[in-house]
Image (tube, rainbow, N blue to C red; front, side):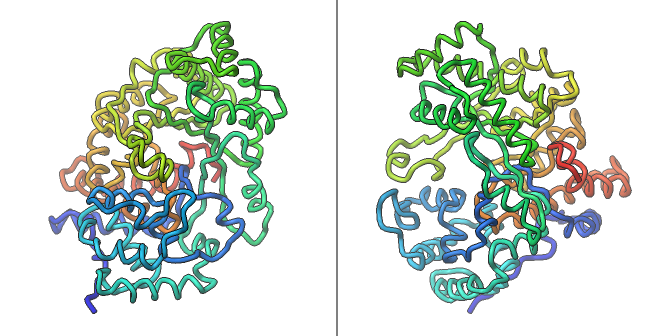
Length: 470
């Protein structure tokens, strides 16, 4: 069978002298503990510690990075992921679909992540193809039956020190509390407060989300003031369980407070199902301002992810649901949209605002200059469509002149695919080592300074940015 092995110099510069520097920088941080302050792996995965059902369940199902490549080539999503309410796809059949179309992933970060998982995590040396699909599937499936490949064992093997999850304000965080109380579990799994579902009263499901918030907080949310009080109460609960940050994903970054009477009027109308789309936008922008205000008050780090058109393809949403690969980037502004909030809170010591974008033109045009002036603003790592080696290099070149390294967030893996966590962090460490080596080669940075920065990017910077105790 044809075999494959990842090259030890992957992602390093082709110039021999620069490559040698990159090797040294990477070697110094390769085995450093992983701090993952933003992700979507559920805490219940580690709390329950059940074996993964199949290679497909672990590496394909629910990973929209994988499924969208297939779908973009005309392969129906239903061949690897069953629509809601329909019988599940046979996992071996889904795996065969991936293997038969492996050529589609060439030179993409998805190929890098999957090859890392197969080779470095599961020890597979056989190259994936239509001919080898069953053999590779059987090799991974056999490993998944071993205790060494249960979630907690892999968590320790990956060297994860901190893993943040993404959680609804009404979540009881039972899995987080169970892990924190379990002396046999090593590491920290921290909740992240995400209130998106209660921000737009014209969106489907808003009233259900608000009622859940009211039940969880034991504060009536039929008034605007009550909902704000409930949000504050739940933020306090998240902090009591170890949470240090919130996350907000909105279509745009406009944070504009309404007159409280107008906000209360829209809230009452929404509670009766009468809020217009325009009122929903105004209300959402007000709530974004209020969340920034709360962050300035309680010190929870606020991550802001604007500029994504969620669920772009309505038929796929109807059949397969959200987070199935059809969210699309939008041009995104920050300077004017956040001006009011930054004038009110941006120079204080409590607010910590980490700004992410999938519009990379914003890195040098807006995010780096904002971080270069406002103590509260940090530039988030390349995210989603931009967490690729080339985009990581463009990010560093775009933001370093204005923001340096200290005002960046550290790497964000933002993944639902548990075994891709070490793959993604390995990619980021190699990409940063390569960029730093290029600065050394052009005598813009000493080797000693480059080594110190490489270490800080995986240690001090992510912990300090997200206010995670070390």
